[in-house]
Image 1 (cartoon, rainbow, N blue to C red):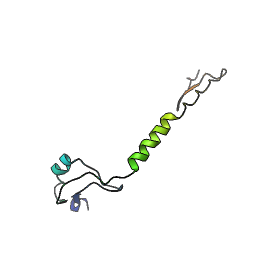
Image 2: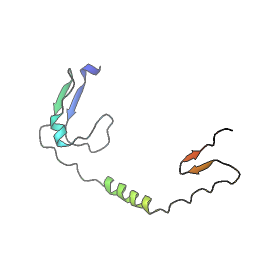
Image 3: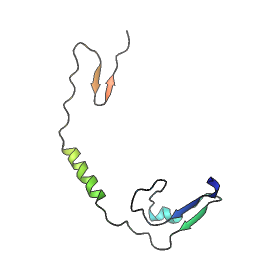
Image 4: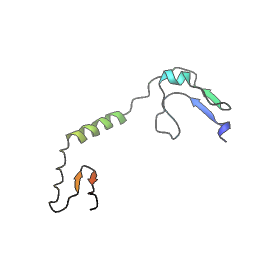
Length: 95
């Protein structure tokens, strides 16, 4: 039941968990729970998460994506008034 829920404030998660959110220290300390909820706080300092290679992998993928050559624009068909720009398509009005 929603009114009998619990909010837990603790260190940053080491992996993605549904229905959990990472907060900065300022907001974690000031967090309040809705009326009727239990609030459990982790005793101790909030420190940075343990190092992982996820950030490095994301950065490497972003660099690879930026280094890829841009795709050639689609040449519009001369007998068809509709055009294409990126992922959007222009549909001519019905006459």
